Length: 158
Image: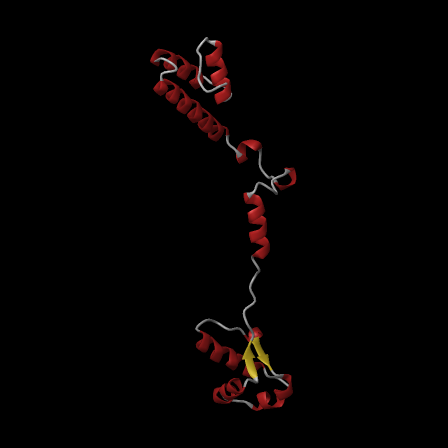
């Protein structure tokens, strides 16, 4: 018993009703009423069967995002970032320029604070600024320890 024509007509009717395309694979026909559906030749007959609930449109199947949300939450906490999850060199994941910019900005900020509080003089500031620009210091703590070795006492270290 072929009901492909009826399914096609039902799909067209449901597409107009829902306001979005409904394919023939989403059309469900009650198996107990197949002979009645086969007898439906016109769209009006199909509409009557839809009203009676013999022909229905199945709901749209979506892709569940729950797993994606869960893994994104774990990644936000720093998980799932081991060797097996990495593609790309260390430099592509954290470029050298990016690392340099964050390091030098932090060092320059620290130097400005020290100059602002008066712990170092403007000439000392200029000296350490130039050394920082040259890449002498690995970090802020390295910068501060070098300032300390030059005989300048920094407050807040004890």
